[in-house]
Length: 379
Image 1 (spheres, rainbow, N blue to C red):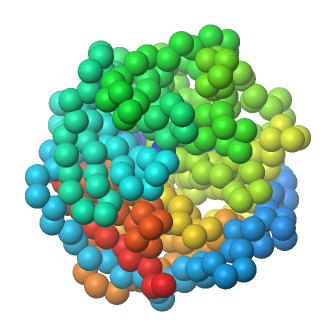
Image 2: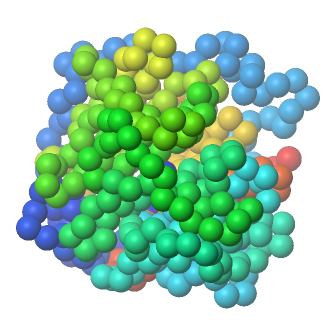
């Protein structure tokens, strides 16, 4: 689940976009700073829910490639023929075979998309798909995950003043879309949430925003076998209500939620871990990166990569940070080569077979982008 340059209006939009309003406005360029109010999640942050030593060893098994370090990275721009139109707030999801990635939706100006593109990771080539069946409505700010035996799963999002709570699956084997049933504790419609498939093979979602009720702080899971939702929100401390964030899983099965924005704070930078066994959230020590929202995120070799996003002062970020998933330690990277322009609402994916990450699109100032960048890791 996976989104940056100075200007006049952008920071104001992002405050409004995650705050109930009569109608959303379209972002232009970064705006004047807004004084952030501190989140009010827990008066005394609990101790870090750091992964165990066993998880650390599992993250880098004997004989495997070593985790990346900030000095082993290099950027390079790719130029494949064709490809999706420039856009922001889309999703790009690697399939289970690791050979393809599917890009869906997003927006440019006031135009929302529901086109579906297949990217061949070995050949670095785009191809637009035309699946059978009724596709999901055009949208941005949705989530997408890959689920074995199901395919590409798309949930939530926004188009104009409409927010979505529907859940869809694209099956490459049949080249068809279908809407999945949703019983149980169905999450209210929203955008700017996050999603990830947990060790239990269920899809976990957390937080988000809708115009009708503001921001959420709930956590829910969707079971694909039972085609139903369950609310697993704990009654104790939890991350403050937010949107424009992302989430990911540690090697030992903790769900992490990082950064985003909340009421009065256009960007925050906290890191929380959800313990499935205890059904509790705990806050990790304050992360090193500056607060941000609408950043790009992907995991490779036991490391999470965070690129860009929007800063708390309304400006944009083009920095790259690495989060060690074993000990939740941060380090900033300065890769070799030309660097992608600062941007927000881009998508980042991991290509494990070729030991690299790929960055596509996003927005810079008032212009959406469709450039493609490769971040290679030394072997």
